[in-house]
Length: 91
Image (cartoon, rainbow, N blue to C red):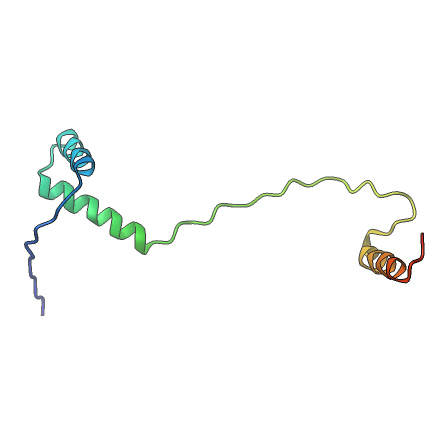
C-alpha cells in the first residue's frame, strides 16, 4: 500500500540565502519550489552519506643510522637509555 501525503509549510529564509536560491532558480530555469526541493534533497543526502576519508600519506626517508645501531632493536636501545638515565649513569 502506498500512501502519499504532501505538506504545506511556511518557511522563513534569510535574505542572503533567498538571493542564492533565486540566482540558482533563474540560472537553471526552475520554479522556486523545484529549486528549494532540489537543495533540500542535496542537503539531506549529504548528511546521510558520510564523506570519504582523505588518504593520508607519510613521506618515507632513509634512517641513516650510525654503524652499530640495529634498527630491529630500537626499543631495547630506548629502554637502556632510560634505565641509564634513571640510574644516573652517563653513556
